[in-house]
Length: 477
Image (cartoon, rainbow, N blue to C red; front, side):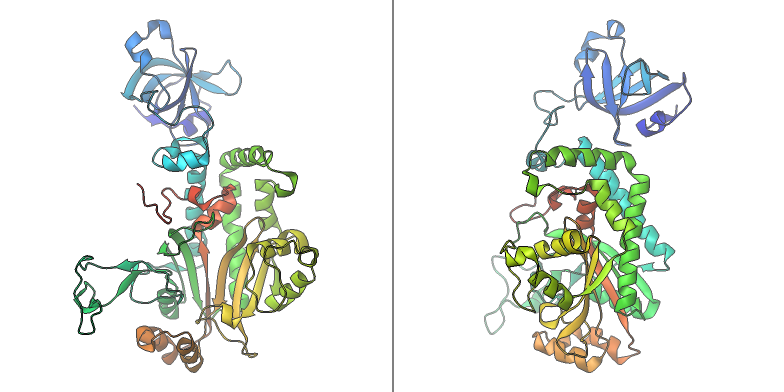
């Protein structure tokens, strides 16, 4: 017999048919009504049991969290809240859940508590909604790039180079930690290591993607990246997923066009395909906001925020213009910013980015032409020699969501920049080769997948936008 999903049954018009369904018990009331959920959608389906004709022993096992297989007749529901229900003819308990021990009981749990139960939290409405949206968002990303003629590539996760020059990398080694081989200088001899040199987990697939863009035209990576920053904020993870397109023959303007079209397109896909989950998460957010003081509440609901990005053209503003606006802004003059803006060259914080988007321009913003000394070595130097062709896309409620640049395509300039940041040219011989053989203008950007998912779902902490978060002092599960 065909086993249906809850989603299929709730959208069917075929009444009075015999159906079979499997799922987990969300609630069981009055010894009669089972709310069964199988993860296919937010809603559960009501299954009505004739308890007088059900074995007492089986009845005892129908607890929240138990897995059941149910067969019965799909009928129009008499009760409020659902259009259809199943009149149960046959019920099989596939797996029990002891109510004294099963932690996800039908009551409100804090997000902190659920992080400790990350292996079971997807059985809650909130996390099942987040994860279904996560899946839709990933699909939309691949679909967008495929439609735009990009090729997907897998950049290596183990690397010998530091793309960002930031040095916050996890080492990959097979050497004996207690007794590593030493060289004549008494330092660890990495020649004895698995790769014959020091190796790390990647912080970005960008440099490798650039090499492929210079042969395939347009490529993108979508894979895990790792940062060994001791950062315990609600926006940082030690392991997260990055989307990094790289395009040959694109200048900064083309790069900005793509970033705007891309982000609007993937958010539009979620709005069109995840309505039930978004409405649930929006209501969750509204309830959460009610507990906050008025000045900390968001001016827009979740779906309004998504529409704000999809329906508005992004405003393009130079870093220099943005600093002028911020310097003369009310919150800056009244010393309301945690990080006051007093001079050109300051690194903008998310409070400044949000002010530009939410208060000043009232639309998403793309900042460009940043000071060279606060940006990475591979960004193209402008003719003024103090700014680079960098761009950041800023969204409401979150600030920077995409960062990118036109890449430095001139060999001599890149060599100078590499020297200035203290990277050994030998390490990047292959990257410099791109500038020796058929160099051309090219650009790209990076988007942290979980940060975009946070924005789309309204989750306040990035640890709730990934199945198993990795952060300092935590590698559980």
